[in-house]
Length: 547
Image 1 (tube, rainbow, N blue to C red):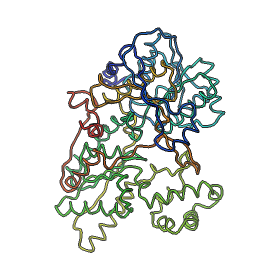
Image 2: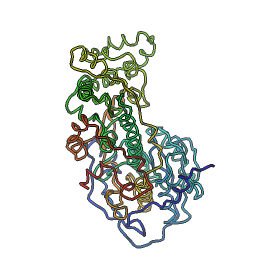
Image 3: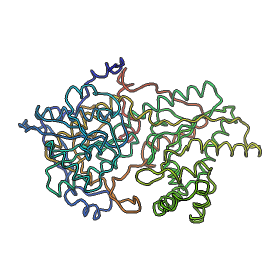
Image 4: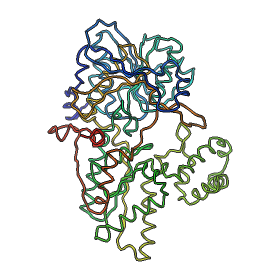
């Protein structure tokens, strides 16, 4: 396999560990916990894994440990650092006993059900240290929710003598991990399940999980490219660049990138929802910034847009909710209707308010709302080209203002969507260290007999030495939400807090950024170079922790 100079150099990087994990550890237990909401419902669903205490690892006495076999699954979308979670887990179980074994299930949770696995040896692990991607074993989106899946998985777990399973994933995957932990505990199978917090979107966080892994690297990668575009934008001075960024359920990526690059406009979905803005309100806001800059002779600029924006516009959210329910209930009938008649069919079946909004949407967007569903039966919001939708509507509004004499500039748009570009980037120093620590922490949770916990590493704006490693019961993060028309337990998503330091810092400066060309060009800041350039935590973390 040919390697780039960077890969060879990065292979030699030794991730840093919290001081408490460097020798033998013991468990310090905190208070019993309860779920963030719907306590009775969650407790009833998870009687064996509810109410467990928070855990912190502190230095302990060395004890001889028997060899353990552990399974690992990469679940859901890729995020930089997944390979280091696996390396940390591998090194951790080998430190406990050199005869311990690690099995990787191929292509996600489906690999467990289909008995598709590989033993991960030191030769394989060493090829993947400090690299991006999930290609060591691949990832998948199979949902583990049926009893036959659990039982099928249990067969291979018993056959391989696996004592614990580590599921590396986002909120849905960790909800699966919790369901699995509860099932194995209820049946007394002797199989532990531990989760690790992954998602570049940054929406899996709380007091115990300060950030999900991959967020740091993805934002640094996107910010570098947005900075490059802003340089180009300020050089040619003739285009407005509409840049859509990952973040379906929350705007953490758009906000972090805005803090790093200082664009002219950044829309934050949570604010749009809180202010009950319509699609027209968002369009008017952008058009006004374009017009104000044009009045100064600046017919160029940058607009950052979170991919999930459409779902946060309250009127659009109500439309999508009714569409989701209607199409779930009438899927068979809808499938029989000719493509050319589907739009009229939908318009005739929706409530008046939603029917009007649906009818007002451009044909392409309306089609995307009804046709393409994800495996959970929801609208595939990422397929809606929000950046084009907004720039088209802005162009229409500016043309109208030009006729009324309110606008004197030229408007030409370029469109970008940064998604896949950041999901498998080589992990930053922060993510390389953080992920390695998460994996190592998972091995200690296993050694201490824990199940239904998520690996937790805190105090992350301090040097890695001072990080606090431990575990948080997954049930503590759960609430009940409607999925597929029924209430299901899921990990509560963390949205951008409008009263939080990151948003307030952005809000205090955006009016100046809108009118002035005050771009920042971060450049490639993932690793090589002076510490003050390469070892910074995200602006979000620094602001949240008052650093």
